[in-house]
Image (tube, rainbow, N blue to C red; front, side, top):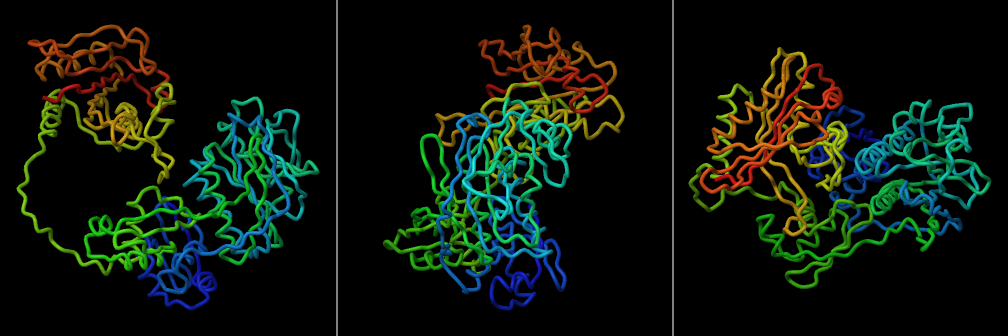
Amino acid sequence: MPVIKFTYTDLEELLKREIDKDELIDLLPMIGSDIEDYDDEEVKVEFFPNRPDYLSVEGVARALKGFLEIDEGIPEYHLEPAGTSITIDPGLKGIRPYTACCLVRNVEFTDEKLPQIMDFQEDLHWVIGRDRKKVAIGIHNLDVLKGPFRYLAALPDETSFVPLDMDEEMTLREILTEHKKGQSYAHLIDKYDRYPLIMDSEDNILSMPPIINGELTKLTTDTKNLFVDVTGTDQQAVERTLNIITTSFAESGATIQTMENIYQDETLIRPDLTPKERTVSVKNAVKLIGIPLTAEVVAESLKKVRFDATVVDEDTVKVLIPPYRADILHEVDIIENVAIGYCFRKIEPELPQVATVAREDPYMDFDQNAREIMNGLGFAEVMSLMLTNEENHYQKMKLPETERVEVAQPISQDRTMIRQSLLNGLLEFLEDNKHEELPQRIFEVGETVFLDRERETRTVGVKKLAAMTTHSQANFTEIKSTSDALISNLGLEMEIEDLDHPSFIKGRCALLKGVKKETGEVCVEGFFGEMNPQVIRNFELEYPVVAVEVEFKSLK
């Protein structure tokens, strides 16, 4: 999770008052942080990625002002028109079509502050931007530029500029192949015929999003005015990111200037710091938090977490949500902030006035039966996380990407989606245990999740079992025997037929069905076979791998 470090002096300058170290250490966990370390000069804190507005000392100070009753309610930010614009090339559609840009004036950089800004930018790249895939940020020295600006799709071999920390011009394609940053992020744009570029009116190149900025606009401690660009594939994420960055600068005294962002069919003034209006039910807050609350107390608690709140009636509070809050998606999120503003320490724990008798969930009985069968066949059970990532789940498995449940604000780039298969998790386990003796026989019983828009939750859970064997002689006959033994021990008959599956060797993969003898009902369906050598190499394994994965249609 993101970790930021700041000095007590920096924080006190923003709070405009002194704060005792012990008071701060006691208060920080109440706003949702985990204190990593601290000494007499600075503190290092970790925040959940659902609060990217906390990833700068300015954001932390803004929150603490509410708790310390220095300043409650939504912060007010003065916006001025910059008198300039950026035009977005329609040719970027399908590449990185969205941008949100503005100017920030009267910034104060020091030797300590400049690295903090860079760290803040990279943390946002990670938390919101999916390592720049979804959102990329550029912060430039405005004083060497002249508007209006252009965001365009450029030919990679016909355009060149001096990239950051270099002293010679490189073409856009050369940057992708020869520059360290270009090599790291080339996969984001190298499949396109044209690459994104931001230029000013004098054809100075500011940036090649999402790869690298130009050396011309490099920030120094002498920089006073900024051009800020956020580009990406998700317009909402792009605009929220700009709001977080600009309001952070405004907290330290800078001035935000809006720009016209001109698309082919509309012109947007950005940043847009208009708060969103919602309502929260006092009854729902009481039910979820578990303490008696009045509408007045709910409103007061929300003001302490920098929302504006007005009592409508005894059960309804109108709430204005700050523009930098990207985590408010549902009434439940507002109620969570009521609890935070009320202060968790004031909530007395109570034992529930309900007596219950525990028993094993019948849904889990089947799991235990399947585990006993696999243990009896000589397989060791592993339990992997339900969260995985697109590279391991699709690319490394040679599978096409499908609709999936994605994590809106992932803690890690390794955990960005919910799995639809157990196989890549087992391969990751084998990759981590290459040093162990062979043969290795492992299995997992677990939930997978698929989109289902007909359901209330828009998802459906599917229970699966997967097993995998690796050693020098692993082959189709071995995994067929394992599959047959599993199906037989479940009291079913196995039926098989040929199957082409990208993760398996062609001609060495079979579709299987577990059928009830009496009724012909298909209770289990899946596939087994010898895994494709390329898949094996993708997970850096050295020996043949055979695998089976089945889905349970009926658990009775």
